[in-house]
Amino acid sequence: MVPSAFVVLPSFPLTANGKLDRRALPAPDAEAYASREYEAPQGAVEQTLARLWAEVLKVEQVGRHDHFFELGGHSLLAVTLIERMRQAGLSADVRVLFSQPTLAALAAAIGSGKEISVPENRIAADCEHITPELLPLVKLTQETIDRLLTTVPGGARNVQDIYPLAPLQEGILYHHLAAEQGDPYVLQSQFAFDTLERFEAFVEALQVVIDRHDILRTSVVWEGLDEP
View 1: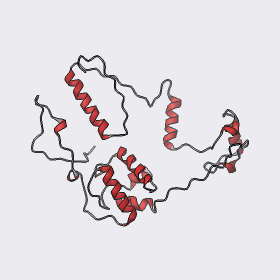
View 2: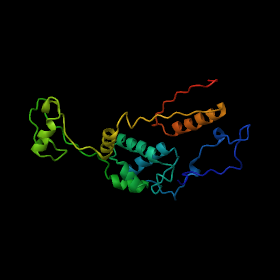
View 3: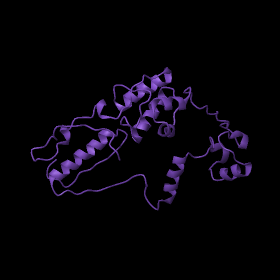
View 4: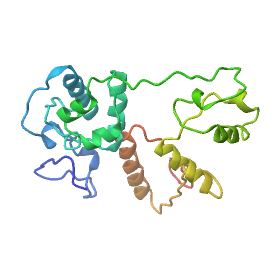
């Protein structure tokens, strides 16, 4: 809950009604974020990471001892960074970033930056009998495999591969099975406003959230207002 950036102002900008004018507040610059004594990145991996951090965090300079979250990073930006790293050919895991949040430590953790080698699918398109040797991603007995295939319409011919769920997938499956009705990942909220001023303030706050988190998808329907 500690703010990632601090901006000192001689006074707060106010609206004509004497309230805080949030639109007039200046955006934090590089000096607003906590930084450490600068030391230039060393090696190709650190230099690549420094470039990606600067792009994601929108800062001009990143040193090898800088801390991702002290520079303004958060969980949503962490996901964005991991994807940028993958595109640059660096093997990445968001858990590594949380445990090694400085640039030098992250670079050392990802090593040479090579992606994990995933074995090719061994199940042929016309396979009629799946054995444990055809499943390199999971260890199952023949009895367990046969029991699983009885739940698949068409049997082995309609199975492309068998592998364990990731922890996040397990959580999604649990909530899906536990939900008595509807989709637990689709949330709906309804708000009522007694004045247009309060409505506009809510819309402004919501827009700030959407602008800061570009992966957030929000659908809004407004009803019952006298003015558009």
